[in-house]
Image (cartoon, rainbow, N blue to C red; front, side, top):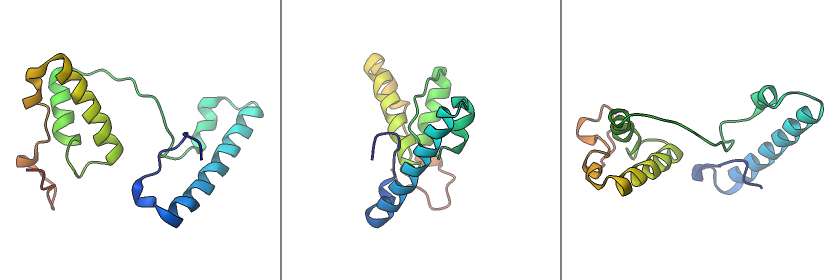
Length: 118
């Protein structure tokens, strides 16, 4: 399968094979829509959550701290946690003192099970 999709590790083995078949079919349908003159922004309505995308975002430092508090948690979705960690590493590279602020906020976790990140 090409790199158009990110398939979670939980969908391994036979499940990954099944998911791959479905995703390939969706891409064929998407490309057919484009070839039939449908605008890309309309055709992408059929694309699943697993579709790769480019993200451009801005935020202030206070919001970045908040994002890290929530999304560096072990209970956050893997892709979001990895993205947030990349952002954190880049900021810390530029501003090393920020390392102590850009952390998961597990001491005040509101999750019923908690993430046990401490």
